[in-house]
Image (cartoon, rainbow, N blue to C red):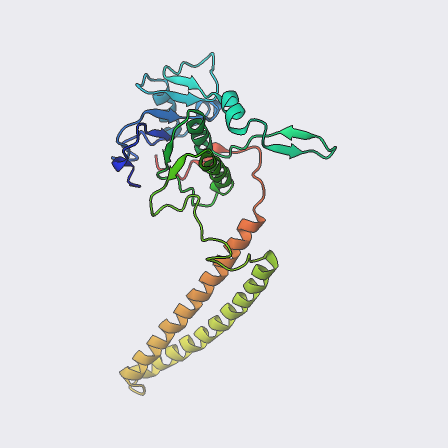
Length: 285
């Protein structure tokens, strides 16, 4: 999976449940550092079996550090190491990322949108010369839509620091066609809206044509029983029905594709209150 086992890297860093061989069989050759930067209350108050098992695992002794957000006087994480956020911010950002406020003043800013961005930032801070990224696609919808930009941003900072960043050839992370050279100009929201209407009209027309062909087939099917229609003619009509259904399916795919692109453009900032249990229900226990 992702060729991580073939890596010659000095260290292997991971996060979440990648250590669990029952879930991710034979993926990691080893683990030198693990990152769990979520607040502890997510695990303390969850009824999900996966989260409870993970929380119990974190409270066990391990031969590698587990980076955590903060220490909890009520919880002992034997391998826990507090993530040095302030030190990293001073090094990686150093007051060079600013927000211009309405009153004309400027405020120092930072940008982390996911655990991966913290991991890359730590590698930058510690002076690694090469970073290999495996399985960091974040290609699905949901929370990944707002996590990807921050990971891409930090990756750009790493390259700007002279660090070599490597991805497998099948990875989509921080990769796209070259704008203006490989692809045409940007498609606007208005253009997508216009295209969507055209595809919807085409879909309606194809559905109408399909219904006509299906109706003819049903009628001929009844006549075929009485011998008034040859099997060859009936077979030809059946192929026409199949072809009509395929045209409808293609139109549906086109409509859904444009709707997805419009949804990405219209994507709003996530709500501050996140139900992590709901979000993790997709993970098989």
